[in-house]
Amino acid sequence: MEVFAGYGEYADFEIGRLIQAIEDLGMGLSLVDYDELDVAEIEAWTASLSESIRMLNRLNKRLKEKAQ
Image (cartoon, rainbow, N blue to C red; front, side, top):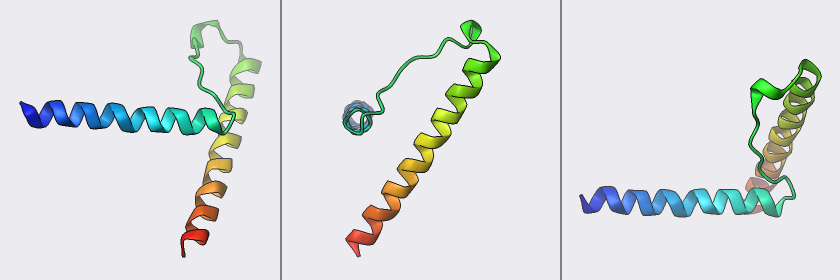
């Protein structure tokens, strides 16, 4: 039981770090209610998400290059 509790605490800590890193990048997090979106909003949200993923991939590449 202690192992499970330890894992839960660790996961909570790491998720908190991830959310903080995303907020520090100015991206923020928001919840999306898909039932309330029209097609144009979904396309805009998808494009924004895709750009965010590309930016994170570029950041990851630069960090790996600096670490070497």
